[in-house]
Structure formats: structure tokens, C-alpha cells
Image 1 (cartoon, helix red, strand yellow):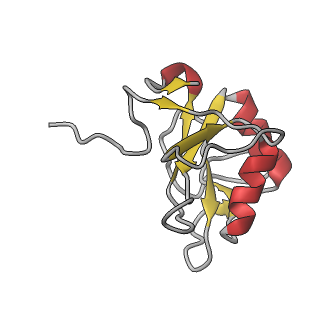
Image 2 (cartoon, rainbow, N blue to C red):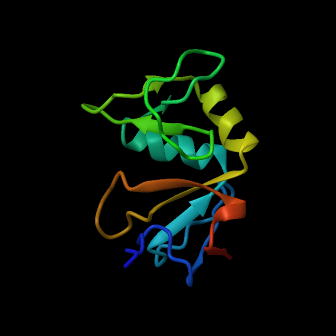
Length: 127
């Protein structure tokens, strides 16, 4: 039995937010391709851009198996991935056609739950 990922509901509409529009406070999960929102999300959690894949800036450190983009975040106290620049992170993000899906922290306070998925592979529906 496949367990559904609450961050990637396939039957629900998930609002896609941009930095120039207000965020729907009632949405439990939010998606974005907006670089400014991704950076703000990471900054609020003291997370830094990272990768496990081999890139032009360095060798592979961990096999992430996500179709080659390999981008993630290092959080304080758990930095096992190789740090990279925001420029390199977003080159991979845009180049692989990805979207950033995360918990809307409106009620519970900040969480570190997120997913980075290919828009073309994702079963979720964006509003």
C-alpha cells in the first residue's frame, strides 16, 4: 500500500504563489517557482542551498536519485550535503523544470517540510 505524501496531494488544488501576491492563509500546502519566496522560506529556517550531486562546482557527496537536479537544503545541525550558491541552486531548479512545495505555516509555526518536484511529473493541480 502506497502512503500518500501530505505535501504532494494528487487530488487537491494547491495554490501557486508569487512574491507579488498575497498568500492564501487557509491553504495547508503551497507551491511556488518564485525565487524570492524560496529564498525567504530558507532564510526563515536558517537553511542554506545545497546539493548531493556532482556539479560544475564540486563532486557528488550523496546519491539523491531525483532525476539529476539534486538540490536540497542544509539546516542547522544537519548539513550533510555540499553547500552551493543560490545562483547554482536556481540554475538547477529552473533547468530541471522544478516547483517548490511546502507547508503553509500559518497555524502551526515554521516547519522544515518541503518537496522539490518536477512540474511535468507531479500529479498535483496548481491553481
